[in-house]
Image 1 (cartoon, rainbow, N blue to C red):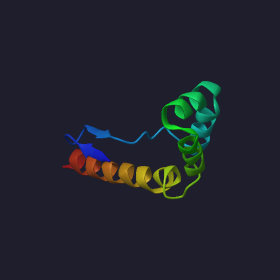
Image 2: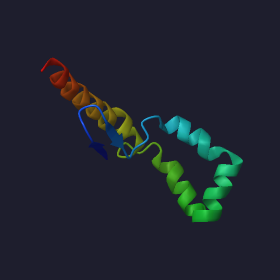
Image 3: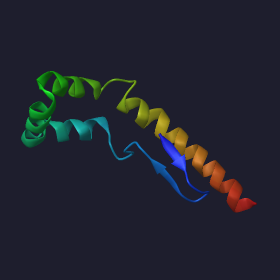
Length: 83
């Protein structure tokens, strides 16, 4: 989800810096794995790990959603800067 507050300012609910390999490294860390399992259970932990390669999740965000959002934002800014 993203919202434009003005032509120059927008906010996002996704983390554009997150990628599946980085998230996998993060969740394989002992303390992170333990926290997720203790908080949400082992099944949820393995579901999260499995979804890192799901083309409808982070991979879709990386390949389509973020580039499309940035392309659209750049087009909008170019129109504002030209006008």
